[in-house]
Image (cartoon, rainbow, N blue to C red; front, side, top):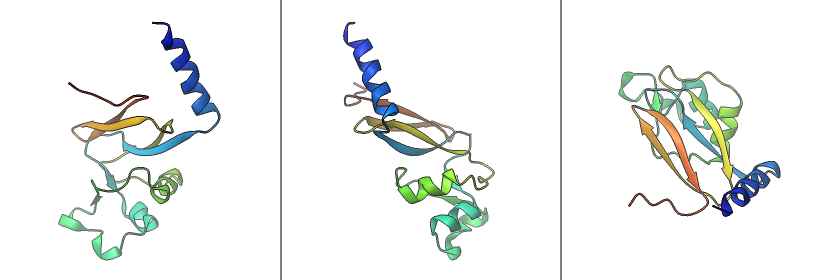
Length: 117
């Protein structure tokens, strides 16, 4: 298709010029969770750290593009035992979804709306 090289060039321009969005995902089986160090640096109250007695803080509703969360992850603080949090980048304005299998996440993104029909 004739538009594929153009899309490739546009995506590379987005990434090269820094017109991108950072997103935090978990790259290991077990699920998205913050370690105690990450949770405290993120600003979570100490009384909320040990939900369920496991010593992990699970947050499915956290904004994965939150600049404070990204800053904490980029500091390189130790991950929780069932988590390997990473920052990935996609072009600004791209549509994306975070998918997971047994807690290990991957990012699907597109320049147009994602349709699973």
